[in-house]
Length: 336
Ligand code: BTN
Image 1 (cartoon, rainbow, N blue to C red):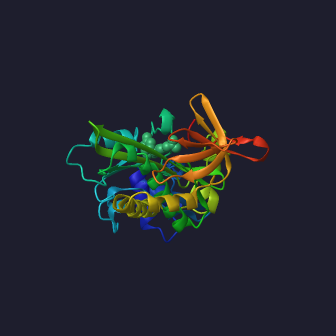
Image 2: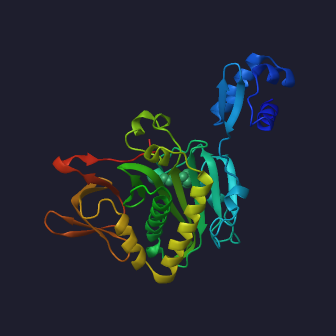
Image 3: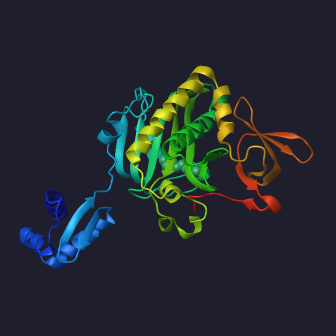
């Protein structure tokens, strides 16, 4: 029925088609037509209804597909092999399950919706259907295990560059894995690796991006902490276009990192780093260090100077900005 209704609406897309016409043509009541129209609207179809004229299909929801993602994608490797799922538990888990020795570098797993998406420290990550992007990229860097955490920072630069170029919005990185626009989180990164006796086999870079969510579509406790490109710009974005831009940017920054090391990435990371030179608080388990963020060193390790002038090297933890008056912003958007 849904298929038949869409077929007629598409055929008549330059005109209005009345409820009576649809009911005669499809052999169901006008009430049934109305109910199906509502279902289509729920799925993201924009259907105009004008009294005495009828219905007109204005826009279809943007559907992601492997073919669309790969069409004209100007990368050498990233995304050239793509596994697309409409709905999946977690792209990160699927990427790791799918990985075999022969899996090409740059293979991506993309989903329109995740039902069990996860963030850092096993926190849940919300990835609602049709409005977000969930992608995991399999890479095979020839690096030491010590250098592995740098990939999160490389990815943060790649996301920031892609989002800023495409949307012209002010994008900021919050160490180590969060991307912010106007003080709210728009994207998160989860990097995992598989190694055997100190030899890196592969890494999976998971990226969650909030694209077309409206404010009320976020859970109430996240509405002041999380944001989407739609909320910040007031316009809807093509997820395919953003995904392609992300793949291009990721390939460019990843290749630079592999070829020239972390120094170039560091400069760009510090350009985007929101808390650069500001008072911050880093929580590591039960320990908290308060100080000024000096930036990151040439290995990608965070440097924090405490009140006594001592410089701490921070390898992991959660960072919060200390605002004037000592108020801490504890941002964990998309994570319940
Ligand atoms: C974080 O902010 O803690 C990281 C969030 C990472 C979410 C992405 S969405 C794609 C991939 N699949 C997952 O289950 N998680 C990552």
